[in-house]
Length: 218
Ligand code: SAM
Image 1 (spheres, rainbow, N blue to C red):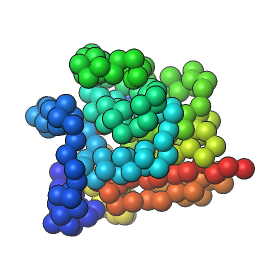
Image 2: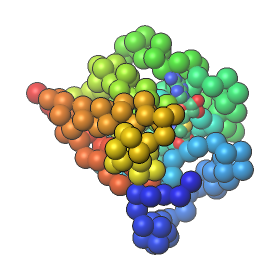
Image 3: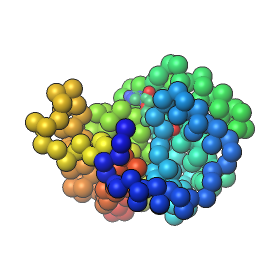
Image 4: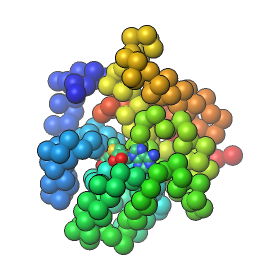
């Protein structure tokens, strides 16, 4: 779908400055394109690399594995001893992601939890210093309390697809009935991130819209 957030020429210019990813990631990205599997866009990839370089996380939690592209990207750009836990509920994608982790030699570093994040998040006990929210957009607001429980002090929460191809700024009446619930929930999510007493958040027009939130140290 056309990106209505950033001017297309500007986006192409910015992306043209990127250094190439490792070949195994290029192969996965092409596979995702061929099979219409949604994965993070180049702008989001670049932002994640920068945030990982700043934050140097030891423990990453991802919600929404798909075929493992972003988990593998993060494994390349996070410290080598960083452990990644990623959650995916779509049964067809789970074996593909596991095979991609195996082929990349990352099965030890990346743990895939198969199931619904709504059920799995409450079972997790350890904290994470970097959480990447990239599951169903309508669920972000519901996952937030558990995500904040699991995010360490000073940790980063990065959420993808928050500007919904630009539709977020439309009035609810201009949004198709089908998208109204997601539209309302995403606005609520953005409001929470910006007004939560424990968070400092920036909403960035990168990719399909990304928020970067820091859990402030009390
Ligand atoms: N992060 C991936 C990447 O960039 O390579 C892309 C993730 S894709 C945008 C979103 C994924 O989240 C889908 O594969 C979908 O099945 C999964 N998902 C959606 N809702 C979920 C939930 N409640 N629990 C677990 N996975 C979920």
